[in-house]
Length: 120
Length: 110
Image 1 (spheres, chains in turn brown, blue):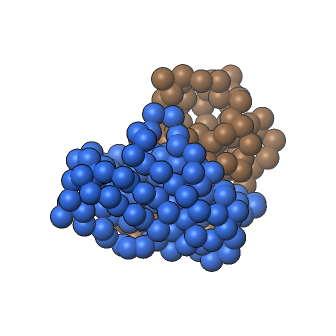
Image 2: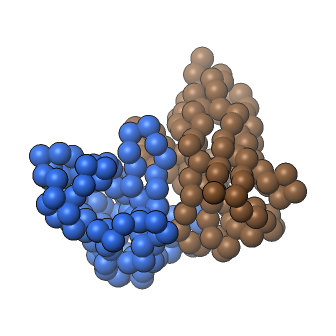
């Protein structure tokens, strides 16, 4: 059974940092691209970041570029999202999403999400 | 950026009836379009990809059609577990920061 379990969310002050983790099981992590997608009541679903299966290529939405780093440890079956200089508008539920072997493709499994709240 | 517009925003349907949801793209996405179902407090679940291919385990009452800029998700006979929000998603616009989602259609009980 495919499982994606996010952790690391929480309350952080503006300008602060968080590291989100996504632990994967039930499949071989290194065979697939991965993505982070966030959701807010006001803006709906918003694409955040992607990483290729081998980790050699990464992509970021303009709204988070230069503040966020996606990386993966295939040996630990874990995906990460390091978030710096957080802003109130980054407040959202962040989902770890499994893609297909290539980055361009549908998102076939989603984690349960982790809530990030940026507020003073 | 490719903008996806979904209609209607809310669809009220009685159990057993057919539901037809629309997704329109601001420019062609060929068939690189997926549909997801989201229930309250849950993550989205993939239903349809490549515009018309059902994902693993998705009941046959769900079907997708369309290409280019016009897409449809049809639920042939609504069951109680189908009342949810449905999102379309295009993954055609490279690089990935161009991947976008529609605002969703809420299907509720009439």
